[in-house]
Image 1 (cartoon, one colour):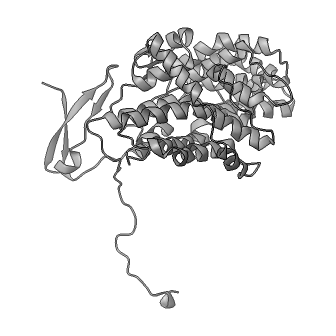
Image 2: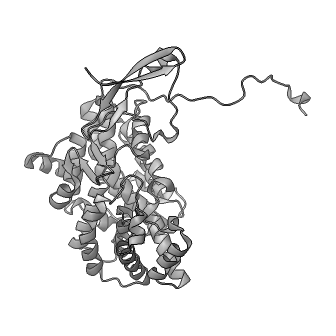
Length: 429
């Protein structure tokens, strides 16, 4: 007999089925709770609520495990590349050589944006944040491709998926180029996915640009490690918006907006702000850590410790070797990078920080790596949106394939006025 939990409310007792995931995590199925008792659950932020059953990504914070479709992130990071990981997330299995080649060719074919999109970007103020431009552009794709908006037509969904993945680097680069007043660079389809993005971000018509293979590999790895992370805010947003049966472009636009929030994706930008603050004060990274220890203000230490991972971030462990290789390769010797190295060494060698559960995270290494390559902090979140796109799509597709699909409609516990009599405006005090 399946395990059940018993809940008693007043004179009513109900049995709640216990659902168990492959990692042993248990959940109480409260689907029929309101119908049987008239009561609902209350869980601000949904930190104890499972919104769905998903087979995309497994996160085990206690043991520091992350896997996509059952493949440990360490294996994918060592042997795969971003487009193959994107295929895995979206389709549920690794592609054959033929399938991967066809997917790669289709992505290359769809990288170009409609010429009218140039005017679309040109209408934004120069100081418009790139994430605002990216979200608007992603949503606007639905106006350029009305032939592929049906979320229940497999062929239309596939072409929309390919268009989004192919065009997102072009959209991201156009948003940035417009903000700094440089001309847009057309994609070069002979380059790799990441290589093409680097070209569109950093090239100008004045001189040739060829992506450095070490930098290209590092950015590809950073994107693999961020391709999905379970039911986070932006992923849940894509699912919730998608439940209205809106087209994929609109759902992704909503996800980009959710990702933009500083509580969601601001950690690596906060790292750069912390390093810049230390540099401005004219102190060393070691002195900054000593000050934190004296004051106990460990919340000021950005990029260390994670709300999900309890002992270490598996993505950071994957990044650390290539982090050092990238820093050596770019040959950048700035005060900011010097401070970052001091802080990393100081935190990882000091038992005080270990006892506080502070360890380098993906956000710390990614921030320093992006900065070393030359990405401004305003673009960090844009790259995150590119990386998260396959995961968002995978969850959106999983939502529509779920036999229990229904529009999301959370309940609430109303705490406002019970009954108020209307007073005509002339008689109000």
